[in-house]
Image 1: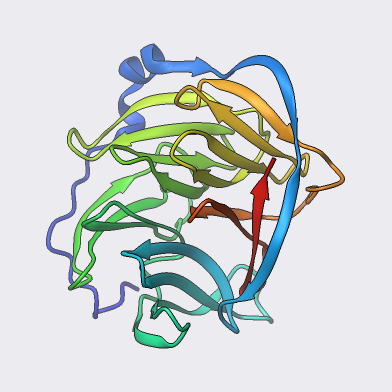
Image 2: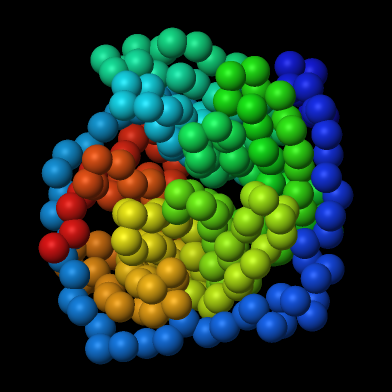
Length: 261
């Protein structure tokens, strides 16, 4: 059931997954080059919430936005509640809104709009929501290219998504409201995605790796060493802020802040 606090102003039902010919032309494979061995240096850990942290974004320099879920321990995969929370520079709660039934995971901010994923129902595609940041009105909803989108990132012009079942990195253009590029990632089951203003970073549930993609996601250019990052079987999400990679482990309200050498 959609939360009545979120007013849907317009729902765009353009079926992105139906653009078979255009996507076939745009689909490419990530090219490999000599792999750089990257080392992850842990800076610190931060406790963000008592619930499960499902998304992280920033509005300006002083406001952190988090998506928090309170899962049902008796029914795995079911959320009792999901809340969008604004945190101030001191970590205090500025405001919070119940988004249960509408948003589930993933969070990105493009300077005006918030972007997040909604739940998947049966064989239907998961929804990508475009939300007005001040009022929380849902301006549009789009079916995603895959059935299990896991994380998203904003690169300054486009929104990028990874899907854990398809293993792909998809570029969504808010102007045309279409997926305009789709590439295979090195990850078998990508769950986390971040953009550091130059490179993309992708976590892989299947291998436990953290990979770096360059040239707009088209080149696999590095992998962190297993002694500094290895999380096989973990649904790890990512974010980037202030020169650091923010690693969001599964089933917890905390983040690991790290630098990559």
